Image 1 (cartoon, rainbow, N blue to C red):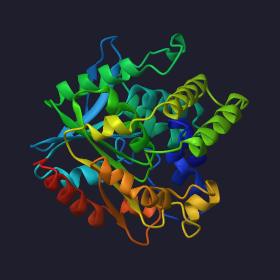
Image 2: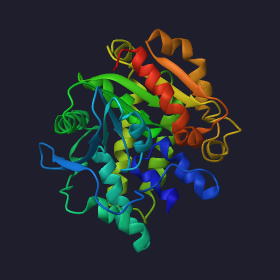
Image 3: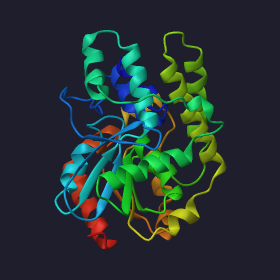
Image 4: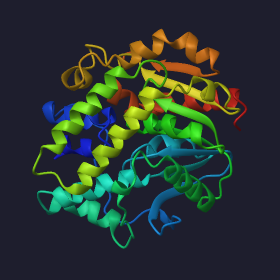
Length: 318
C-alpha cells in the first residue's frame, strides 16, 4: 500500500513512501495518520468544501502544508513555543486521500482515512478547470489562515509539500516568507517535470486506481507544467519575511539509498548547494544536516528545529 501513497499529490515527495516498500527497514515519512481519533478542525471554503487544519501556539505564524495530519507536525510542534503553527491540507491532498480510501485493500488501510474524512463535505470536481485552480487554492489557504487567527505567515513544507508551498506562495500577498526543506525550488525543473509526466501516464493506464487518484495526478501534472514555465525568483526575492531552504547533506546522492533506488539522479542536496549563492542573493538562509539523506533529515527534528528557529529570528520573525 505504501507505494500507492504517490497518488496523494503524485509528486517526488512521496519517494520515501515508495522507496520504503523496497527497503522495509529504512526510515519512512509517515504514509498515513498514525492516530484514528479525530484531530484538528475544519472550515468551509467558499464552495462549501470542508478544509482540514490544525493550529496551536502563539506568536508569528507558520503554515505547514501536509498530506496527512502527522506530516510536518513534529517540526511544527518544536516551533510552537513562540510561534503560531498551522497544519493545512489543501483540497488536492484531500482528493488524493479519498483515492487511498477508495483503493484500500483492507480495514487496516481503510480505517485511518475513514476516521480522518468522516463527517466532512469533500465533494469537488476539479475536471471543470482547464488548468490548475490556483485562485481556489489561495482562497482556501486564506480561509484556513483566517480560521486559525492568522494574518501574514511563513508558508512551509518538506519535500513535496515544500514544492507545493513554493508554488503557492507567489500568489498570496499574505505569504510573506517561505520555509523549504528537502526540495530545490529555483532553476531548471526538467527532472521533476519528466517524473510527474511519466507517473501521470502510468496512473492513467492503471485500471486499479480510482477517479480521485486520476484527478489528483492530473492536477499535479498541471502544476508541474506551470512550474516549468514560471520563474519565481523575483517573487521570492521580494518577500519581506523569512526565506529558508534546508536539506540533508546526502539528499538524493548515491549514499541516500531511498532516493537512489527510486529517483536516481535527483541529487537534491547537490542542486541546492550548487545554487546556494543564487538562494542567498534572493535572501534565503541556507543550512544542511550533514550526512543525512532525504527521509533521515525529515526525521531529524532535534537537529533541524533549532536551526530553523535561529534562521527565523535572524530574519526578524519573532
